Length: 252
Image 1 (cartoon, rainbow, N blue to C red):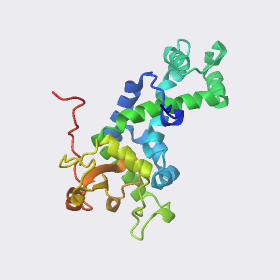
Image 2: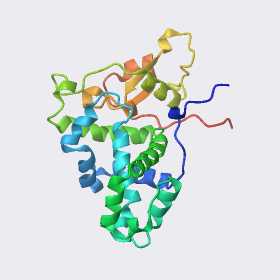
Image 3: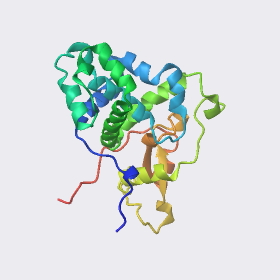
């Protein structure tokens, strides 16, 4: 039996992963409450990165990374003497450190900025959070609508835009189609018919932009859902609420 490629997997550490995921969820769900923080992550010159077509390090990864970093280092500003969370983070993610690192804020950030392992650990935590949130299409619709607002307002990225300012349609790479097909269990998200090994060509899968390109939605794997051809044709360029129904993990 062929062993799996290590690069195809990430290690599930369980370090406050749902706490960080909940923080990201709340920020995206109530953007007006966190407007300044979101602007720092997605706005201004950084908005051009939202227009890059189908990067494996997605727009959502960028948001999660910055929020995860804030969560993990929250004690550094307020209670560095105890630093329970950051110590636990170091332990679980195998980040070697001396106690002198936690003597004060300046010592910590000097260490962090010189430690390649620290930021790789933040990336690993971000991967776990992404794994959870990628399954929630209602969240993904809210997130991509947020991204669309910055894309529409930004004056950058002419190379990625049409004459009307929306993003150009590009070919969806195989890795993105596979990710969406497996996440959606091979079912049309709208009508729930199975698209796995179909014979009827009318039911061939379509990869639909949740927030349409015509509404400044990004070319990002987090902005895709699986639809059958009839449902995709009926939706067209409209933005509709995504289905909140998921297949059960096992039969009743």
